[in-house]
Image (cartoon, rainbow, N blue to C red; front, top):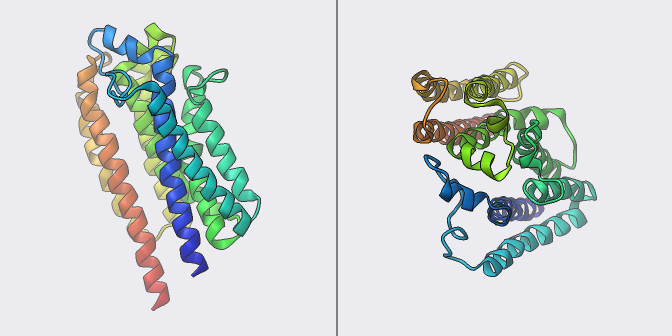
Length: 273
């Protein structure tokens, strides 16, 4: 019964925290003028939700909803820390700080263009939630939980990196220095390919170190659409040309994530028999 309660609290907290991070990103991009720049910059595809930029929801209402989600996540984390110890507060607190200061002043991690944003995404969408959830269920810290978080964390980082290609000209005009803005398309595209290879290399490493069972290697096939898209891209491309890359990133992350998850479930069932 205790494990089920911990799982439900962790699940609710993760969903609320994820939605909060997306919405606080929208809120501060709107306040920092990124949405306005995206509308005014030719051949740029806006990547915000549109709720604030289009006036669908008032900024005050959007802000209340955003902080309401934060409150839900915070309550769950506080309960989990009471049940499982102070380390839960550490994991949750670090995740909250990264989510907020990713776009909020004075830090603006995502605006600095030195790779900080990519590290932040890897930590907040890969390492912290998986190591934290593992700790909640087992009351232990294990290096295998960190290794397990790397393939999906790197693939998620790749999604966030690739989406910068869609609106990098607007980011540049608004002073948001992503790596695409700093490096330019050619070098950033080469890094995107490197990040893709690194993601699947992390999966190979996890199988080699027996963190995942061998049949998790099926996830490697989800890389095929990536290379079809990369092969069609040139050194410089119009923003719409990057939409297939975003689509490949999203599909690969979901599909590979499901395969890794199912492999762990199957392994657990086999071991229980």
